[in-house]
Length: 146
Image (cartoon, rainbow, N blue to C red; front, side, top):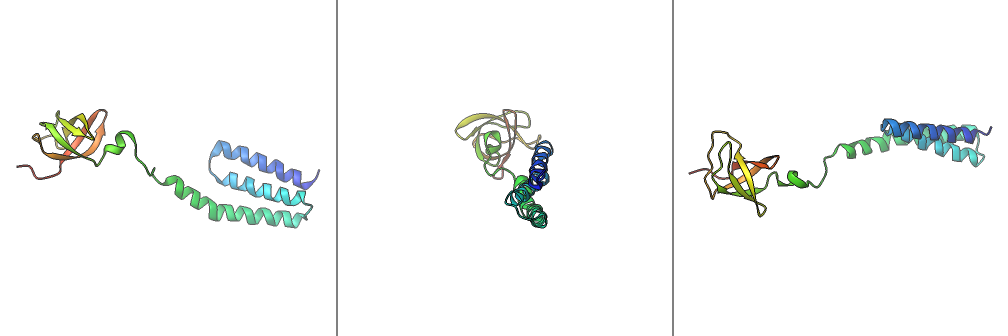
């Protein structure tokens, strides 16, 4: 059996293993085995095939994998849904206490409660949304209360 077929079998096996583990390392080794298989199919010597595998694997594991892992760890650039409302400013429409209240947030009326349970925020005060708990905004006054 030609050596290049063994490289392709190894590439497929590593690719399948990558699909189950999602480590990215086995996928990069599968690509390296594929490169070595192509070199073998082009009737290059075994030494060249092994060198192609080693160089491609080293480049993948030492250069590509750290970059890919860094990108996978980054938080999403755009926040959506309730997460997009955190940090926004709102106006109190009905007195906000530690248990209840109403605010106008992004043009909509929301139920709200104060971050500090003992705090009372009167109507008309600007607040910042600190957190969203279900359909309730947890807020903190933007300015000093009178």
